[in-house]
Amino acid sequence: MAVQAAGLHRHNQRGISGDPETGADAIVLSGGYANEEDYGELIVYVGERGIDRETGEHVADQQLNDGNLALVKSFTDGLPVRVIRGRTRRTRHPSAWTPASGYRYDGLFRVESFWEERPSHGFRIYRFRLVAHAASPPAPIASGPARIETSIQRIVRSSALARRVKEQRNHVCQFCGSIVVLPGGLRYSEAAHIRPLGRPHDGPDTTDNIVCLCPTCHVRLDAGALYIDSTGYGCDALTSERVTAQPIAGVGQEHAAYHRQLCGVD
Image (tube, rainbow, N blue to C red; front, side):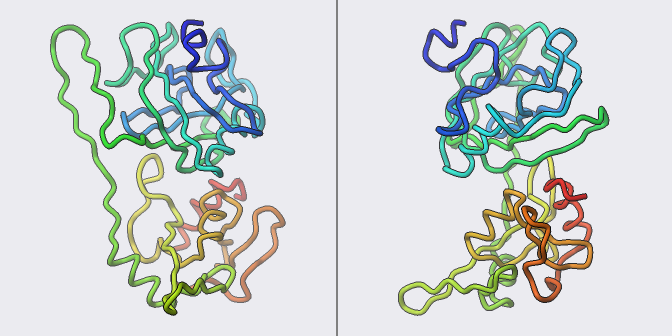
């Protein structure tokens, strides 16, 4: 209620503040979900609902509506999201960034990606990867007078690999076949990782995990609207139809299979 009164969050019960029309403006991270991960400037957040408030156990599938869809809107529109960290009596996985008591505003984050999963409990959840706008995370919280030494591991993408893949494909999108031409006749394309880099996916930065895409297909691949089927063809997840005339060359099928799971296809 204090966070709501401060104007940082619209609700005093729900974890996600916002709506599907305007996006999510804030989330509360308080360790209530077993699959949440908090690394300071990187958060893997679990969507709302599908959980028993008393026991904290999953009892139903989460749905892509309400607050969950609001976070998707923040992803598609690039809207910043306030992150509020809190420690509650049901906090399962306190991290170095969990406050000892109450709730703390920890700055603006952006939704980098989202996907669905079915963990061991069998119920569908939605997970959102959020990255801090600031260059450094909030200071870790130590219990007592002792200090906690922490280190942040950043993903360093190999620009040489990305450039090689794009040049090999002559900057032609491997899904839709389009070519983006800039003034001066320069071609533009983007290198997209099939299995995402970084936690919790830990995809490799290798050529068999990279495809050359136009900006539109890159966004659709990351959002799970495009995938590569078991025979290598590019497909539309919304229609289940093939969108490529031939299998996409050079793709590691283990990476494509992992991405299909994120899309909810397999």
